[in-house]
Amino acid sequence: MARPTFPKTLREFQEHFAEEPACLNYLWESRWPEGFQCPQCSWKKAWPIEGRRVWECQGCSLQISPTAGTLLHRSHFPLREWFWGAYLVATHTPGLSATQLQRQMGCSYKTAWFLLQRLRRAMVHEGRSPLAGRIEADEVIIGGPVRGKTGRGVTKAEHSTLVFGAVEVRACQDKHGDHLERAGRLRLALTERADAVSIRSFLTRNVQPGSVINTDGWKGYSKTALAGFRHELHGPETHALHIHRAFGNLKTWLNGTHHGVHPKYLQHYLDEFVFRFNRRNTPMAAFQTLLGLASQRNHVPLKSMVAPESTG
Image (tube, rainbow, N blue to C red; front, top):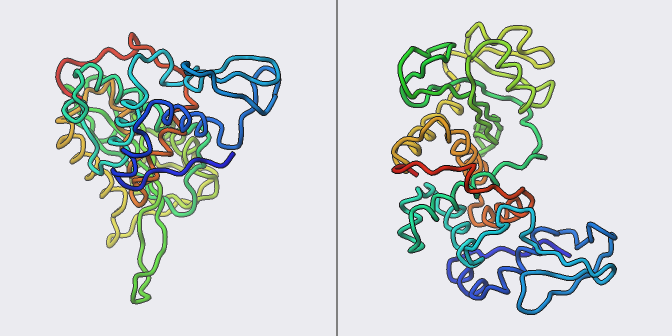
């Protein structure tokens, strides 16, 4: 079974997903893009049961729902509304706050916030490949300083968070044949401090060994932290152009779209920013990617995501 095609325009989306069964079929195909295989008997054929959100395996009669064990599990929200929310979140370039999604969908703020939080948890593919090649790495402070956090540039005040960032730098040519550089894939992660141990942990989780790591002269980028990588200092003319531009866009997005984010939820917002940044050239395809990832993640109960009263 081939991966289903994705809607490239709003009109195509409305026509393709006008009814609940069409959404259910699309979710089924997104969850098993290589073809269905029964988890109980490994049989490769199943048929839908009319009037229910389940298929029945032809081999052992196991009844399977494409939403079972996913972020959509036990949701009373219609699939059409889930699809509409996923489409808006994936294709709207600046992203959406819960308040904006509430207005677009005509639902309650709590529903919009919960839907957004679930979708953000689907934006990280656990099997994603590490960054490779030449990498710019640095840190940035989001918000005001936070008590108890130590490291470069962090002072003792409230509501700040230190964030690690790394971005690929790729060579390219413009239409005149001139050699240029552009940003590739991005990674962002919260950190308590910018010491060698924390830097080492971030890089080993996110960057392929042997890659070139461009940094400034901060002492945390020690030989121990960068063991297995090639280390180069930023030149005065480059000064980490790509990672600093990503940090600037991140701050603009957090302050402009969401009017600030509580540190408790910040990593999920970082995941959304990375998801959007890494798919900035294919925003329509991001809808399919989000649905495909969302159908492979476990259910997240409401009690584990207590919504704040204001920002979203």
